Image (cartoon, rainbow, N blue to C red):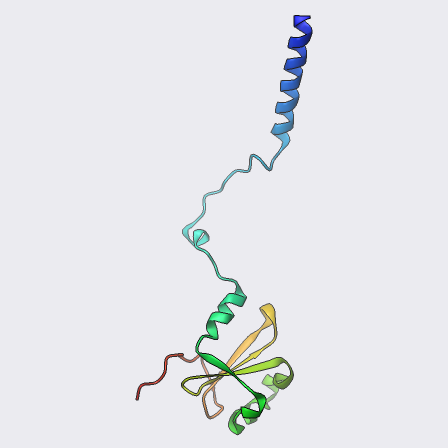
Length: 125
């Protein structure tokens, strides 16, 4: 009787250990991370929202004529249907077109001339 119980106990332990040995979710090896992987990253949507700090949305009717002329170019085709125009405190403008990862931003001065991304700090002249 003792041999039967001992045999069953050994078989149970062996079966359980074989089951856990095949479970790869419990024994994932941890790979060392480089310092860049440990830093939290921001989503592209969050970065775009951070880019809009200091900008206010401009209604289509309030867009100045020089900027409207620039936006009539083929590069900005469809801006009036799928784009949003913003203005910062310096008088610079930003056009956002597209959605998600395909969203693009364009920047313009108050005369409608394309510029690189402006500084959002107000001019102190």
